Image 1 (tube, rainbow, N blue to C red):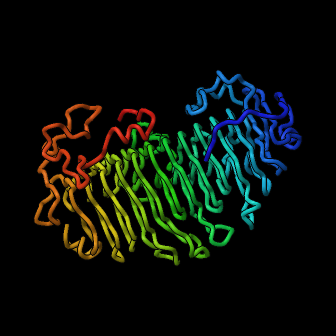
Image 2 (image 1 turned 60 degrees about the vertical axis):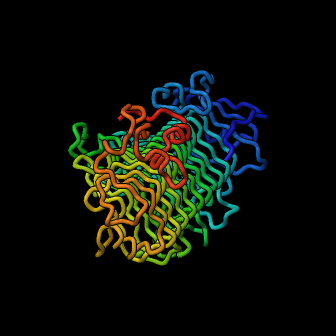
Image 3 (image 1 turned 180 degrees about the vertical axis):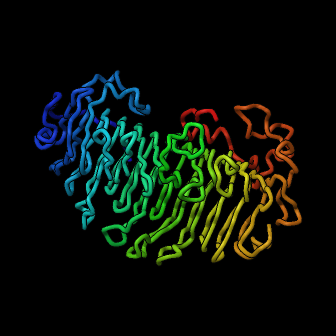
Length: 495
């Protein structure tokens, strides 16, 4: 999606404190700008009407441009004093009329009224029965969306729309005890979607696609870009942590795809996810025909590259087919050039597994990752997998290594669950060569790998490492730090 701002071609409609934003939305024509008085509150709900024409209607703060970060730079709560506040005590703060399109919000704070927990803060789409009625061309740019700090809110943006982007924004305090919550969730919009350079905070699934059956037959949310976000759960929500605030919000995972196709997940920092309402896996690529009415549900053509996953109970959980209702097969996943660190252990709970792969996937490739996890490398169960590739990784072997239900460590599991797999040129720290196919490496310790002894390059192989350029492609095994840093495009916070 191209989210570059366009110069307005129409009028400017100014709404001062106490003014009628809904009336301004009704009057606005494509190309117009609605400016809202900075730091003033406007009480909704507000409905975005359908208009004729394909120029953008921009809703923005009256504050000058230099009071906000420039386009491409992420907003944070310190800018709230320059933002008008849209709020509601019932319904959603913003909802779309069928077919509404071409609205861009810039520098707006969106929140529930004080001590109110809403279901959706922003509701894009209301279960329209046809694609042409689904709202489209909607952008939230440098906006601050949050639930009530005490009561929470279930969902930030219900993204059941087309051509929708959330960029350079800050979403926080989406939490509930006993129910799933998300910063962004979509289940009945076809896409494309762009989620780029945001702070995304939620207790349940910070970002979720799928999770409910689409209202339109054969619909799969598609063409999704999730790039350069900071995706986390605050430690104030973690039971037993020194800063725990006393409410057991239902914690699950950081990213989940249950029904999604053609997804790029790149340059993100995923961190702070622990075992609570689930086992602690940070990333779930788990196809689900959620309510049994969508057998076309699929997770396919997913690229997960150049990310950091850390301070979590486990890494990635992959499900080949829904084990409750019929679904399509999970296929064509590529997990490459990522760092997994501080995975498992007493603080985060969970099994510490790098990847759990269940029920017959097809064409999953895991390559050039560096992982120092506390548990197994791979765990397999159910129907065997086809077209599996595991190569050029640097991983901790630990006790179980590559293991499966009812099979031994190493070749016993590979023969049973990954019969045509390619497993080569991996550096498995602490493993044993007699348990695995030839053409892999088994240093006795992390020190024997030969990482550079510099904090900023701790996963780069030093000149004296015996594994320099030992990958099947002539490159170093493990992560390429230069490529990862370039893809992230921002400085990851220190551990």
